[in-house]
Length: 122
Image (cartoon, rainbow, N blue to C red):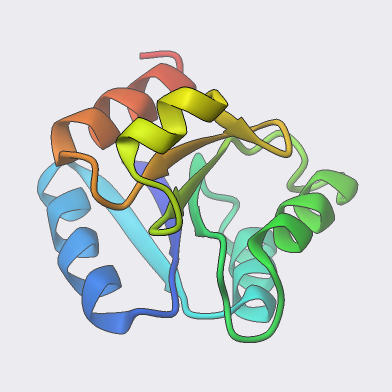
């Protein structure tokens, strides 16, 4: 079973998205802040990480940087989930932040799942 780490401080959003990911066949682990994300990534070694940019204790960019610096987590693909940009703004700016792909939270689930499959080489 493919493992995914979902990091978002909006617990209701994480719960709903987590259920949809389970329906798609993922084993889902959740974290609600940057520290928890780093701990879960090291403990669970997920196949991919969905990471919110705005977290209560540290910026998602910092979390991504720390994951890239760690030999045990540096190869895990990261998709930033953000409510900061709309799809139109995302297209205008490109499709990555700090070298990581991002998907607006307003995107359709189909688009998110397509991006997950692409990042995992499916």
